[in-house]
Image (cartoon, rainbow, N blue to C red; front, side, top):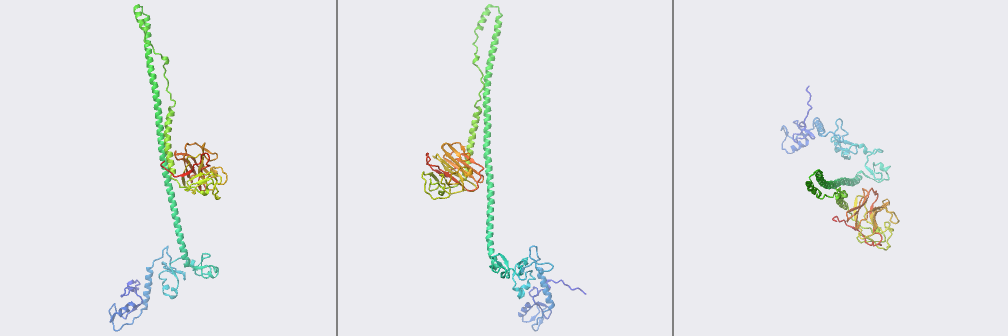
Amino acid sequence: MASANTSWSEENFSCSICLDVFSSPVTTPCGHNFCRTCITKFWDEQVKYKCPVCNELFNTRPDLRVNILFSEMVDRFGTSLRVKEQPCVEPADVPCDVCTGTQLKAVKSCLVCLISYCQTHLEPHHRVAGLKKHRLVEPMDRLDDRMCKKHDRLLELFCQTEQVCVCQFCTETDHKSHPVVPLKEEYEVKTAQLGKIEAEVKQLIQERQKNIQEIKDTVKRSKADADREIADGVQVLTALMRRIEKCQDDLNQMVKEKLKSTEKQAEDLIKELEQEIEDLTNRSLEVKQLSHTEDHLHFLQAFRSLKDPPPPRDWTTVEVRPPSYVGTLRRSLDQLEETLNMEMKKLRDAELKRVQQYEVDVTLDPDTASPRLNLSEDGKQVHDGGVRKRLPDKPKRFTLYPCVLTRQSFSSGRFYFEVQVKDKTLWGLGVVRESINRSAWTEWTPETGYWTLYYYQDGLVFRDDPPVRLPLRAELQKVGVFVDYDEGLVSFYDVEARVHLYSATGCTFSEPLYPLLCPCCHDCNNSAPLIISSVNQTD
């Protein structure tokens, strides 16, 4: 018996009218199969009833019958075709929970059945009335997690008190008095919050990216500063080395020229002496020869020439003095010092210009000013008025010292300001900690929070323990103050002379710093104000 051919193609199960897989196939009396809808529509449009395949005519419109075996074969072929068209599950996909053997990719999950379905096994949910009411969502795994562990019911509500998902039974027991809302409603709330969180996270990311860029910029600036510092140093030191070499050459040449002159003088004198010795030797020989002659006439004639020789040179006053080198090296070093001072002047000027780039605009705070002080309207000048005014009692105010702080404080980075001290005989200025005692006597030192320069008629002092006395500079008119908070550095400059006065290094700053001005009392010709000046880098 020949075996049946079970290899059927889609053409064997296709309607010859619509050319698609049979849908509700029916059979004509001649034995051909068509979709019920296709053949019905075909005959509705014809006058005579015939088969679309073999053209057999029928006297009357035939009754269409269902070939049960063929219909079942069509159903099986359609199912097989749909299965073949569906993709198999991948590692990242949700598998169909119904498939046996090769699992297909789920297209929906049912929150009522708690099962994920592929397209084929989902079909009843589209056809059966009871299943149509089930809630279908996009495929998701771990559907068991959606069930309440205590009541075995679907988690479909959210407790706003305890911020947990609950089932309907939970709201009647453990969460009876708690406000609950549907998951969708809370989802929308949380989604809105998530958007805000996302925006905040983006903002934090942007801030940190900005911080990274700032750090990179700082490193870049630091490298540029280092390169410039090295270049400046190399330029100055190269100039000094060249000057030292020239001084050495000049010194050698000067000493050698003096030695050469002395040697020439000695050589000339020696030649002259040797010539006189030769002349005297010849005379001695003539005397000796004359002493042996017995010719009276010749003797007397020759004796006369011996008796009146040229007068000899008086060598008692002639001497060769060794050259003096006193001051030779000093003069060379003076020239070197002059060169060094010129280079130092260039460096001081460059240093001052560098710190002036960190100029800050500060104004005086009247709430901190001593009752003796008068401030200008623009907050740039202060002097002692000589009279103690009645002012509101404020914790920030100096009550013992004639001092005032600026409104601005600094807790990081670098800053620079200049104060005119012209025509004053007493003054103090610098920076102080925010927490200094402003109403009691305090020794002004870095330990108590003061980094200040103090000037009086006989001296210039950095207030420390012990005080650091500095060279008194004539006509000190303007003082620059530079602070590097992070490096712990406070430096003072004579702006007009472009000279560095003093630097306090290794300072420890742990709180805001305020610029301080102290004009002192108006006695002793000290009525001129202290003036916060704008930086003029063209000076």
